[in-house]
Amino acid sequence: MNTRHVTSLVSAGAAIVMLLSGCGSTGISNSSNASDSNIISVYGSEPAHPLLPGNTTEAGGGKVVDQLFAGLVTYDARGGIHNEVADSITSSDNATHYVIKLKSGWKFTDGTPVTAHSFVDAWNYTANSANKQASASFFSTIEGYDDLQKPDVDPKATLSGLTVVDDDTIDVRLSQPDSAFPVKAGSHAYMPLPESAFKDPKKFGQHPVSNGPYKFVSWQHNHSIEMVKNPDYKGNRVAKNDGLNFKIYTSPDSAYADLRGGNLDFTSTIPDTALTSFQSDKSLKAYNEPGGNTLTFTIPEWLEHFGQNEEGNLRRQAISMSIDRKTVAEKIFHGTATPAVDFLAAPISAYSKELKGNEVLKYNPSKAKELWAKANAISPWSGEFGIAYNADGTAKNWVEAICNYIKNTLDIDAKSIPMSTSDEFLSNVDSGKMTSAYRSGWGPDYPSADNYLVQLYDSSSADGKGGNSGNYKNPEFDAMMDKALSAPSTEEADKYYQQGEEILLQDLPAIPLWNQNATAASTSAVSGVAFDYGGGPVFTALTKKQ
Image (cartoon, rainbow, N blue to C red):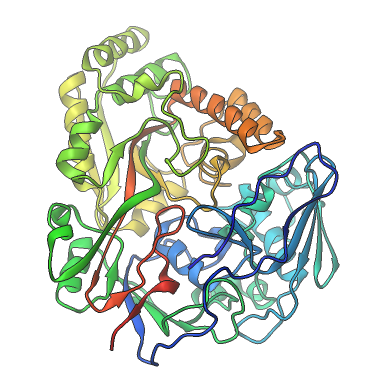
């Protein structure tokens, strides 16, 4: 289990402030009593990319990378921060300068040491646009980032703000204050890589060498990803089992059937067909708790009639107000989701039900028709409105439901567009090839509004550099995010994040729908089921009776 404690964000006006220092494991044993056969089989989906942390932004690969790699910090179930490979992170100069000290003795599974170069080389590789890594924008506040985004950039060019002082010390200089830097330092983008990763990144992504709680064994594409407990891991998340077998499914129904038949130990993806029964199924153990995942659909800026202008905003608002979120949640999610009131999830401190403009997230068919008519006066509507989704997930029923609401309210042709696999779907999203709206959502990388807002809607995250797949760009929103990152306290930062959300509620680059609970089911033999701050399963805590 991730073991991290709450650490307040750095005061922007402070001198050198010790953010994290000497924090160790908080309650997780460094040993396991499980037998050698205590391998847990869990539900998985085929990763969209090779297993390079800086290019992993979706759940299929994210769950795997989380288990294989260890970063500077980890997060506990409440979003608190604990040092992992970092011994300390200190800040000065108004949160524009950080010094990171590493713990000694860490090594990768090939026996090579984890050093300051392991982090800095990985960060430089991810930030350089020539390498086409999806998490490049996570480094946008480090000096030299803009130079690495130029079309003719040298693939070996590096961030000028990063300096390796010695094997255990990293000096980081930022181009602007970034009080969230120590928080996001535990995300995928900031994981270290060994020297072998840069010699042949493609090969490495198929057989990664890592430093986390598990050691990679094999990846049989579209079948399974296997890993075993890493005996040399010395961090906060020591596994209580002997390994994990991510069995890859193209249908959550098939996985659930395997679970009920004893051919799968654990799933955190409950199919729509089981939502009404999984909690009362006596053959299983069921779990349903509040979580940090958001469910949305994105209407990209390049679609005709949906540009970032008055017509586009009117149409987005009309579509949003056409949807009865409460009824869909009751009839399809059966108590495992709640209607969205903003762009965040309840565990995040900036979450608010009182934002100006949040009426666009409420069902109001008469207002929706009025707004659609105003948009038609600017440019008459023609064609159909589609929402794409991956058919190997759980989106089919809710996508069809909201399409019916849009069709019936606005009297237009609205339909769902299934794509066979997550891989196909995400490839089209990542490459900007979508010709319709598409299902989206977010499971947080780190416990801050920054992760939901900057990484998904800031201009620095657009154009293939981050999670802003719809290429939304609004300078007013960007400026509000900069103010949040410069704020002297979490409370003040949250005010700016909320003001930024009020801009999003006008523009609606994505349509917030529901916040999803953390749901899971296991066989009766499995114990230790727990969830992290975002509602994701803590795989290291799982164990089972033999």
